[in-house]
Image (cartoon, rainbow over all chains, first blue to last red; front, top):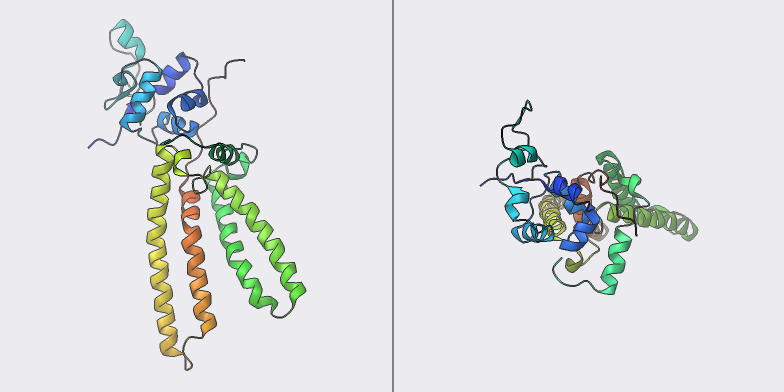
Length: 94
Length: 175
């Protein structure tokens, strides 16, 4: 069983200009929990992951994945990133 | 959070999440130091009673400052865990509930080892001492075990608490 769930929560949160506290209040979690998810120190339950996805009106797989995320620019414009380490996830690892 | 928090819960959540003393317990080293201080104060407070003997003034002079310091220290530890053992289930989220359950599990294992060690020690004392184990020693051992049963989960939780996430990059929107 994989114990590593990758996420791009911090990227989406910054893009939408949502603070940790605002997101935490909206999904019924402690603001530190949001920080721990972003830092990859806590894997959210399916329930919490779905609530976070619903808050951003995104599919849950846009935020959480068992595989590292490709950089957003690659996903939008296609191609492969020229970054030296392409395995680095876009967001933190959960 | 499982059910709707009451007004009491909301007050307690605010109290346990105050930011004023955040630097006091920032970093593992500081949290460890506070935990050690709390263990020492917890042991020193009941030890003051036999030390003071019949001297009531000395007893009060020792116990009152120790209890006050213990209360401050307990407050810092509760703040460091954001009220993990002070808030009710409905006031905690899933990560906090998991952290609390983990702290209880670890504390339970340590408490079991402590209990076995104390019982073994008392048994050995009973065999070696001519007059056996006195009632005072037995009561002190039971009292000590009671204190660890009560406080070990808190100490465990503080020692296991990870550092808080770095400050938020996103600024709150102006009202």
